[in-house]
Image (cartoon, rainbow over all chains, first blue to last red; front, side, top):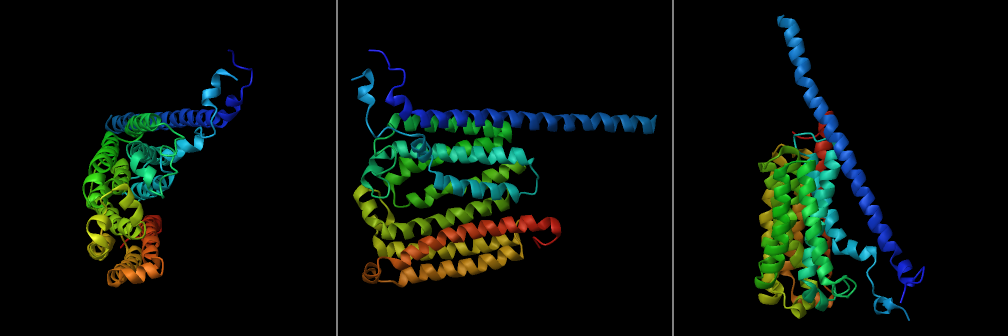
Length: 61
Length: 310
């Protein structure tokens, strides 16, 4: 027997599915934010030594 | 009648039931103590990294809660305080609680490792193992010291928070651990004094069941006395200061007085007034922990203005 287009079960589980969907969306946003922060910090960390080296080279040169 | 009639029952789990599996009230304590551990550490952490780290520590705590509810469903079903939990009430299948607990354990440890460092992640993994296996599966059903040793699982979060910032362990983080570790027995035994029937029915060997109430009362007083020097002593470390010292002295004096009162109290008097003093000590113990960690946070918050610390 086929599902009716909108079974009562679908309505009952809507809250559960919506909750899970929001949790997954929040997780994706969280990981995206974490990636941005990590990359930005990495840029800062990697950016520092060359500029220091550059300055040192200029001073000594 | 449809094919889905077999699923048409009113006790189907909602989203809230899966959240309840994670023991949100315990999670709030984990979030608070882990956040304090992280914020009072001498090494600064990017606010977003700190936020995600605390979130995943809390998720790890929730995962161990789900594993506890899966394994303890038989005990929970006979205890009045816990029989309406999602698994014993039949809303969530035990296998679902197990699956959720294992999945969230893996996700929380992995994400904490990626967000912060692998030492903190390994610490979180050990905490989940300690709570789910050492406490829930082993100690809880076998020894009246279950609360004492099992309390370590609840005491690790500030150490994990500290490890997120520093990548290691120090005297300060061990003292924060001891504060919760030594606070747990008097806190739970005060609860057991007025919830004794529950533990007797569930055959959980709580101290009140195996050694009686008189011994339990003596143990509560003993632990408040052992706890005090460690709690007050934290004031003289790098995370302490005069605010914490003042708060800690007052709180420990009151906690010891509560323990003394319970020790001196006859069982007949306790029964007569519906365990009023026991309930008071239990409620005060929650305030005790909250204010100790709150004072540590205040010291750290005031430090940039030259007011916190010594």
